[in-house]
Length: 476
Image (cartoon, rainbow, N blue to C red; front, side, top):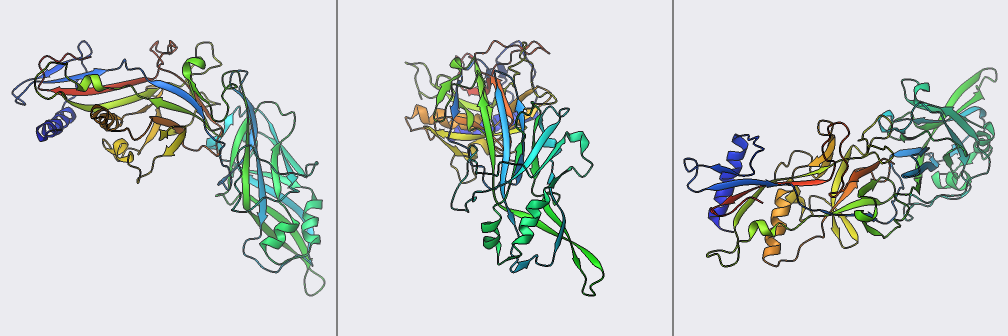
């Protein structure tokens, strides 16, 4: 690419930032010779076809998250059901020689701190959470646990709480009183040499949704909040033998994992782990479903025809083209609504933020600052959120406007037969292993119309580009 071309490209960017055009009657804007010494055409195209595929990658690792998950939601026959549960060891930290020998148990309580902003489902419904004692070891750092995993628990619950979010106070703490027999078991063992000794005798606790629970909501409970703790309230006799003193002991949490059980609906039941399915086979819908490994793969169309001169034209065969901006617009749809009502609604919003990864065959590589492709998604506005795709209430869609350099680089490589560094982009939820939100979006062939404004809800790639020194070029 010539230095002359690069100089003009930078000039064009400056001009674009200095002026705003809202013309819709023409796709071509001619900038006169009083500004630059040649004719420049600025065009856009929004009819590009995007190959969209739904992928079910490997299971999601859920070990040692900063959240406990517990809840149940039934989103209908098309989407399916989601149940979440937590399995955790109790921790005495670095204490050694812990001794409850002279203590009398008054009560024991499991408190969990609800993160209200992450509730997914119908918050007007009650949910019943039950606590069980674990009877099987949760292995240490050398063993991973996935969303489908579980460990054995006792058959009978040792505590439960029925509530809805409005029932709990301003502290957001859900308090579950446990059977005193469990606390007495801890005391009866009397002395624990260290954490390993404690873990060998007290395996831990599980939080599950009561069997038969009607559809309600799924909640996240933060371990970063000091309100999430197991507390033993005890008493003991003072040295004078007359006064009774009160004391408390707080248990933290060590090895733990969340279980996320997703029962697919009719739209997702045919997509198994390892499958890659075109959206034409899934009712023209793409999926991004947290906690399941279901993500959407995008293969963008070739833009080589914008760059190549027609055969027989003298001079360089590569036209001077600069992609100024490339916007990807993704419209969420409500698949259980006859009109395809858009999200987010009050109860089941889609992920607030999503990210791009790069697809390499059947594998997905997350983007990081040492990844070769990272700079392409950063180039145009590096301070605006890296590779995130955010939701805008104004346009009622997700959008990402930093694809221009990524597409420019791919097109140049294609022209010179340089192998492409990836097989396209993949839309990944920001919190894959600690949320259960779901995004269903219209693909590029969808005929759905937005019920609020009547505009198309199909996925669109809108490319704004400039062509230098080619009077014969017509915007496409």
